[in-house]
Length: 281
Image (tube, helix red, strand yellow):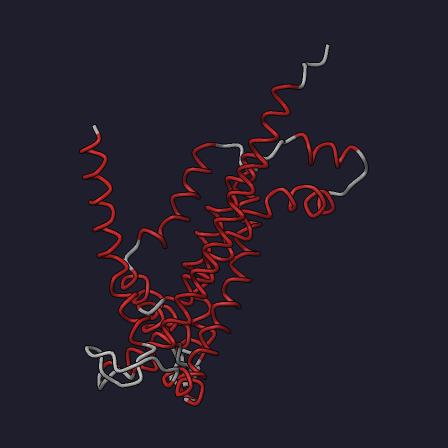
């Protein structure tokens, strides 16, 4: 029994090492005083200073953040109301059909999604007589498209877990449906909304394939900028940038997990309270 546990732990350690070793190497050499990726010459913040002096890299980073924040906000609002509508559907077959359509952007290969969106944008741009069919707007629409399912799948379970008598009680006490949603339902589903928004943000910030097919000539995101550098040689300042992004995403994931853990504790406490409460006679 003990030997099997030891083997399983060693196996898990090897898997984690295989997954995270390249990231640790990248972080390690981002502090190297020389350009070498095989010999560590000494600790230095040289490449971090060079990064903040590179206007092109900072512009690409700013573009990625603007795109990710914009698409995450729009996806969160649209996904929350979509989840609200799906949770109110009475017919099971209709709800199943809508959820199947919702999952398509997640299940579809990125290259298929990117090509199909590009063809649609070019077709619409040609019909409208636009001089340039692809731009920031097309990238924004594309990122909203693949971000929506993550928001819906994060918010919908919160609607299903919520006590249905709460919004009904709010309506009985004089609230309008809109007031009931914002004052009663939204606070209950907020952990799911925040989780979905963070997921949409990270997916948008990380995306490369769909962005490559839907980008305009005047707008470049950070993944596209890094890809352009790989055709020549990748500067160690990109290691520094990747390190910063890695820790930023890590913090977001920790926040997401903390929100989920707090919500689970709250739900468990509520369930214990309901079990202890004697039924009304």
